Every structure is written in C-alpha cells, then in structure tokens.
Length: 424
Image (cartoon, rainbow, N blue to C red; front, side, top):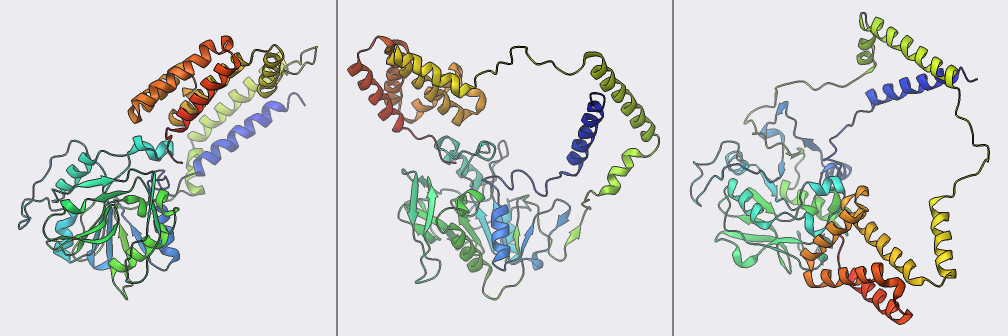
C-alpha cells in the first residue's frame, strides 16, 4: 500500500494537468464581472432580441445591425479632439458619433462610472467611483463638451422613469450618476430622467446618438437591482425601433464599422482533444516518457526511504482556533478582566473591516492604519473620534471601570456604524 501511494499521486497530478488544459473560459473575466455586460447579452436573448458581440477578427457591417451599444472606458493619455456644434471634419474616422451620423445607425453611448478595481475586488463603494472630470474628458474625445454631472448623495436612489407613456418602470441606482439639467447645451434634451437629473440624453445635432449617464442600468451589477432589467429591455427595444429583427451590436472594442458587408479578418479557434494529442507526438513523447520515469523513481524512492509521516505518540489533537478563542474569553471573564477582552474584540473587528476593503492580507496593523486613512476621506472628524475610542479601548480597556468601558464601547459602536464600507 505504501508503494502504491506515489503512483496515485502521479495519476492525480496528470488528471489536474489535463483538466487545466480544457478548463478554458468562454468569456473574459471582465465580461462576467460586476462591470461586464454578459448578463445584458443573456437577458436580451431570452427576451427574443439577438445580440452580436464585437470581435477583433471581424469588421461588422452597418446593414446587419439595428442598434449599436458602446460602453465608454477611461483612456488615459490620449489626445482630446475638439469638435464644434456644426462641423465634424476634425474628428477621427472611427469616432462612433461620426459613424452613427454617416450610416444613420441608432447608437447608445454608455458613460463610465466605476474604476476597474471594482471588477476585481467585487466591492462597489464610494471610493470606486471615477472622477467626474475624467468622464467629461472622455466625452470631449468623441465631440461632446460642456456637460455637467451630478451624483446622488444617498447610497441608493429609486425612481420610476417612463420610456413609454403610462408605463413607469421602477429602477434603483447606487450613487446615481446623472446629467445636470441646468448644464444641458442648446439642442440637447432629456429623454429619461429622475428627480435628481437626466439619465438618457439626445442632441438634435446627432439625431441617431443617445447618451446614457449611468452604466448600472445595463451592467451585471445593476441589472439585479429593482426592475433595472426590465428598463434595459424596454430601452433597447425603444431605440432599435418597432418591428426590427436585426440583432443589436454590443461594441466593447470600438472598432470602425463597414458600410457594406461583414469582413472576416481572422479566424478564432476552439480547443479539442486533437490539440492535446500533439503534446505526445514524437519527439515530445520520448521527453514525456523520460519525465514520467524520473518522477516515478523520485516518488518511489522518497516513499520507500522515509516512509509515511508518523503520528505523535501522545495522540493529542490541537485545539481549533474557535475553541482557543472561547477558552481565552472564558479565562478573561473568570478573572474579571472584561476590559482586556473588549480591547481584543475591538482590534479583531477593525481587522475584519480592513480585510473586507483591502483583502485577506490586510488584517494587521498596517491594514488598520489604511482603514482609518480611508475613513478620514469620508469624515475626518468622525474618523479621528473613532480612532481615539478604539485606541482607548485597546490600550486602556483593562484599567477602565465598568461604566467607562461601556461608554467608550457604545461610542465606538455608533461611530463605526456611521461609516459606509460599500456594497457587494
């Protein structure tokens, strides 16, 4: 039995390697993240609206699509192309506004709102919002300027806009991002809005172009809130036109369109079992054979020479972390030292909040320091008071009277509850 263990381990390693070869993602990680649009694609398809995704190997024909949706992203370092209201000659040929006017193609441009870190961390908090100045610069690049933006002061804002008369749809947005009505240029009007501002904008100079201020109405994160999914379907159906059967084009690459036919500029490949067989064709088969022989000898020699790990003679089982914590708390209570236990509770609670915001490796003093720096950007006075209360409980809790301990702990609880740590 002892000599068969290396063979079993080797077989397990080979099985994991084969699984890694075929475990190929069908879409990018970003597309399935909170900021991606995979959910929109699947939702529209279930409602009977076909969707075509942008492909770097294909140049899409304008005649094959009914609506183009372009989620804008912040492109740092690119030059801004100025544009006046009555001329577009200075714009780049691949500018989506120019293409929309040239091909009379309904185009929905979705403004950015979140930083890329939100897609990796999975936390949509106030610190993950893009600066409004960066959004204005991005609009300048496609020819729109002088728009003012506003964000809701409340965490979630609910509204019931109407895309069709008499058919309000309830939507909910986290830190709702809208156009300011007072800043709209002449010739630009509101299509859909909320009490705080304009969500969907349309300008007479570009009759086929619509601007959506808040991407949470179309991305994976926002579609799960309230009736945002129903609003997204109604919006797409309204913009593509009644009786339209051609698919919508979800353009995440920004490639220019073709005026006539779809052009295939490359070929996408799918993996199969035939691809794995090529790794075992001679001379690779001889190399793999040598590797397997050496690995088998090493495993066998190690198992035969040293043998399996020995159990401790005492047979004692180490206490789990939870049991150790409970035992420590009981000893502290029996000794009457509630203050020291309270200090440890405060320290562990701050470490948990730091791990929530910055990851599993932030549960230490450095992570707690970063936590207070972040809270200071929300409310400096409250953050300083929270830091003082926490420091008093941790360092002097064991010498406090019961009344002082209770008062400081209540102050710490209220201050901590006044801060926002984002939504998942």
